[in-house]
Image 1 (cartoon, helix red, strand yellow):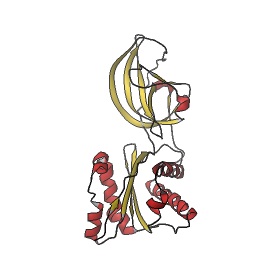
Image 2 (cartoon, helix red, strand yellow):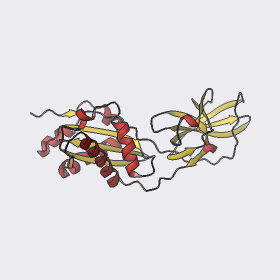
Image 3 (cartoon, helix red, strand yellow):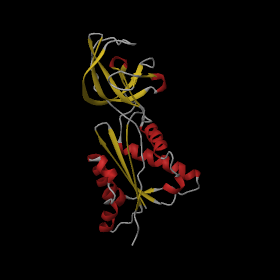
Image 4 (spheres, helix red, strand yellow):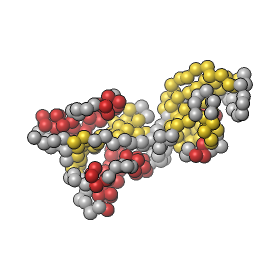
Length: 248
């Protein structure tokens, strides 16, 4: 019986985040009187943030982490702290960078980021495959070819499951892809997956950056080079993009 190998690949493709609350309040710094009133979820969105903005470790603003200069230009905002500072009400946003760093900064420093091109799942999948095959070429390997059955019958339903319940999908010990493949008479050796956010100007740029993070700390030779065909599916849910690879 064929042994199915499944491997989790972490991906930070980072983030998109936040509904911008337009409160015209200027932030103050130092030992000002600060009171946290409440937290709230906000719609994910991508932002550029003033590089001089002070960054805090939590929504209570009890500890400074420095400025945005060390966090990058584009972030994902996804949570809000409603603060009373020096007697005035204001809002601070929690953000996450492409490499997983988090912090809090005053909402007035956040400016909506708009990528140069609209995200396309089909183009993103194609660009991911092109990036993988360019690495294979450097290792004198033949390019992976898309297997229509693996893609439509295995990758698509698996990606939908992943997007619907990410934590449950990742924590499962016995994956269903191998069982499904066997029922359909398909050959499947390994399943890889990753979730991230679209923070880049183009699909190609996103694919390049995300794949670099995806494969970080993982041997490309071991992970990819023994395979000939692949099924790829990406599902967009909220601000996140969930991608599944089925390899044989």
